[in-house]
Length: 264
Image (tube, rainbow, N blue to C red):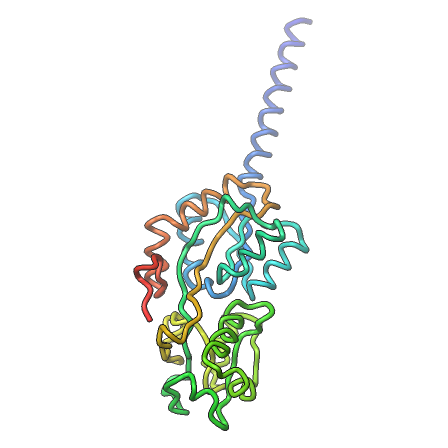
């Protein structure tokens, strides 16, 4: 009888171990979830592929306006990482206690510029040209997209707010959409990022703004969400994102990964 009890106990322990192993495996397969501004989409997609290939950890990313992504993360109360297109919205995320400030890192830098359809049909050369009669201008929605905030600040600094605002015909909901309206010739110019011509070199041209006309440059930060159920895995992704391999991918897409690399 004692022998039978021993066998049953061993079988029970074996089954318990198998079930525990299955549970652990299931947890290990749970994807990291990222809420990201679309300004970071091209290189981040490649980083995700490289990270998953190296670690076997799946990653799911949602893209849109940085403010919209923050609102979605707060509403859902889930997500592992927040990567806005500019530090401005990460500051807001910290204020709202949506992220862990100690995990915050800078990934890359972005510089505002005038972006026009390939061939520059309206011959736009300067910021003042955006105020010319008949020029159709697009800027990202300032309430939810950092690029829109930068555009408004640039117009104000150069005393062109009223003159340019009368020419604004569309306010796209993300950086990606802002690039698209220019690529489709729906506008004559947008305020975009200098990396837009790397996104779509066959359809877009970038006209850099003089440094003295800029209010600031942006940086793309990353931080762990306070809702994350797997912060250690999220930290592994940050480590990879900011590693030399991650930087190499961002450089490949035309992004500066150090302030010294920023060009005007």
